[in-house]
Length: 283
Image (cartoon, rainbow, N blue to C red; front, side, top):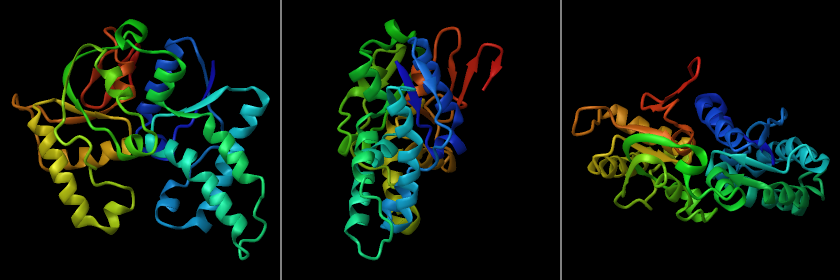
């Protein structure tokens, strides 16, 4: 397949290694990955905070950036290593377009935007969803060569669980990585407290939720917490770092993205300092 990478702004700005790992996985399977140059923020932050008017041009840009490639056959689907951003594209973009159509004070609203946004959303997938549902990956070790001699736990992000209905897709992939021991996370379904601007506007509540999540992660004895959203991992990682949390053996407890785990191989293993060792150097 030809697959467009929707990198997302937080991955692009703070965790480019996750985008690199995503490309590695897909190219390892023989697919061609392209990067639509016009992409930027999906507008999730604006939408979740109620700034629909400000979100509208951001949504318009996202639709323009991806629809042309679908129509021309440049790529078949789009993928993002972020459940929350995919949830926004699938569930919020058409919504804000319809909102603009119904508002008399929004001038020049494009009556075609909602249907165009739906079309883009229907062909946009979260990474684990793409791997399992479209590409038929059921055994990461056998089909991807994934290998990681470590013990981890897994935090399912809220958007992935509740909007995308990912279910056990990410966890099932992790459980088939060679040499990887995946231990259950108590109260895994509980939010980590990030929620984008929620963590800023409701800092005390967010911090209390984070403290519970960090306690549960460290209670597993795992060396790292994996997840499918770098925003949640950034929040959790910050809590682990500030509190100096360590494993029973004294090593710092880390966070790691699903894509990084799946990209890890015997020849190029993941290191828990957050870097992927690659042939010819480290990125």
